[in-house]
Amino acid sequence: MPLPLSVLDLAVIGPDTSPEQAIRDVVDVARTAEDHGYQRFWVAEHHAMPRTAGSSPAVLMAHIAARTSTLRVGSGGVMLPNHSPLVIAEQFAVLQALYGNRVDLGVGRSSAKTLVDEALHRHPRATSEFPEMIDELIGFLHRHWPDGHRFQSLELSPRVETPPEIFVLGASENGARVAAQRGLPFVYGHHLGRNITRPAAVDRYRAAFTPGPRGSRPYVIVSINVVSAETDADGEQEAMGIALAEVERTATVPLVESRVHHLAHRALDEGQVVYGGPATVHTQIHELATTLGADEIMLVPYDLTGAGRSRTLRLLAQTQPVSATNGRVPVG
Image (cartoon, rainbow, N blue to C red; front, top):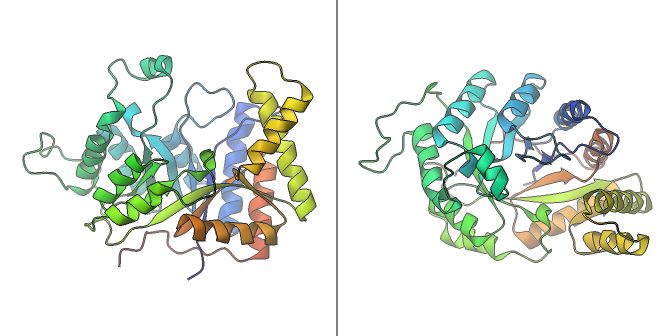
């Protein structure tokens, strides 16, 4: 079976881009993904980060879904400790009702900085409560409650016939365990800067997977930073240029030029970015999928511009057809 490819867009605000243009860029990249047959298109949640425009996944998803017709649209992800599980269940049920069963609900546990946490909610739930919050989300969306649960009598509104599919995002064995114990798909965040060896989290997930009503077998998606150009040399040049710009714009103190180049080279050499011409990138993607034990790869286009991100997706799809199904995780 061909390897399905999906997309995660981080809604980056480039050095010469306004927040409004960054949002428009995300929509343009989503349309490119749909036109070229990618499986899903997810957006992230980041707060109080001036370099990203993706602070409200549900709102941005609604905008994208309204401007596409077949593409699965999802969150990559909603940071559940920032929210009430009931509110998230209701928001995504509304999205599912509006956009014809093409909504994915990816959730993670990452906590923001202390001051941001305080601004988001005066009485935050600890990240240690993440498993309990996942259970509440499942309960509201699927009516699958432990006997005697205090929220069992609450009725989700709207109650959609096919609830959004839930995915657990993580880069540790803790997240893998939460997904495995509940029979949910697991999304491993390789794009966050992990190395290229097979992570223990993926092995733990597969070993501990418990079949249930939401899945009878494990399903692993791995997210990978990627940049492609017409040739390998052009791809390397593009990747290095972006890495240099990222180092410079995220530095908290002035850096000498040699240090900037060292940090940029290190980011690329540590396997955080797959780059090159389309054929080379495809080869590396498939090798990583095998190494990391992935059933699906989620590409994170590594570019500060929407045009650059669209170019990467277009070149990869033109070189080798992208495999897209209905996007529902196989359960058989």
